[in-house]
Length: 158
Image (tube, rainbow, N blue to C red; front, side, top):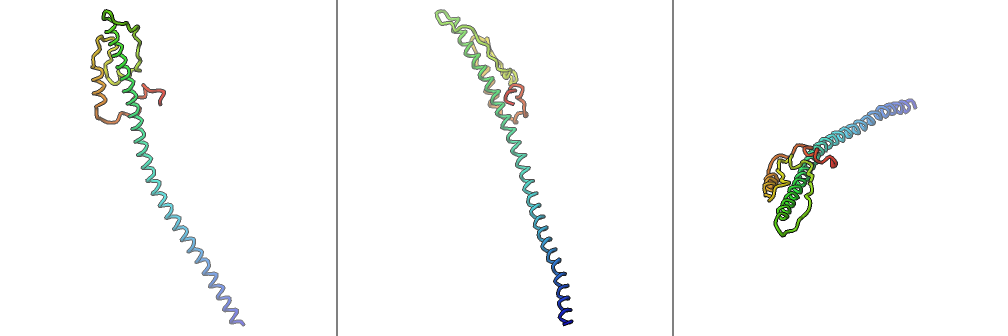
């Protein structure tokens, strides 16, 4: 009986000693798995940060290009309006032709000045030089405009 009791006590000691070792091994496995997940997520975060930076750059370029297009359009409309009015003024001075009435001011919000495109609001007969300047400007290949370069002309779109 003493031998059986001693064997049970010895077995209990062995089992009690083995249980913490097993628990420690499970905890170590879980910790290693979590560390692996953190490393993987860290790589994903780094990759996503690069993507966000790239998309922000592309968005800024797209916005600047859109602003440049709007400024170019404002100037084109003003130059076209000047040309029509100058043509009408020339026709109005011819004997027997209709009079087109008062000339209307066209506000281009100084976009043509910013683009260095000459306007001819009172040149009769009109010339194509403003259109040539616009075409030369539109055909230029160059760097993307400075971010916000056209903001002074487009305050309500910012």
